[in-house]
Length: 123
Image (cartoon, rainbow, N blue to C red; front, side):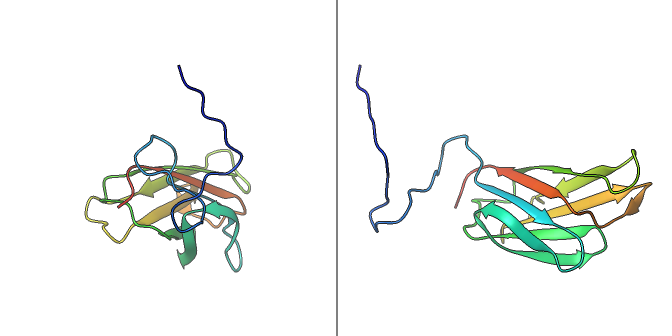
């Protein structure tokens, strides 16, 4: 049995190595969805788009190989206990954008804490 130990793994260009086919998250974002939306921290997210109240889009730095990826979404309700989220990758979404929605009392609502995670294969 062999053991591989390393402090840093780089790609051939000297940058950070990117997970490609493993079952690790290929993108994630933690952002504020109120006012001027802003990323707190992220991986493989180039930018966010504020589509409307409670509707956001994550724009990936590196595309997924198809629109058949999975998005998990969580958020913090602002004032009610009946909040829920909806996310969609979209089977025709080759541009690799995650569509995120936050609802409270069955209405789209902006929320301060939004977190998304994407699993699938990179292009």
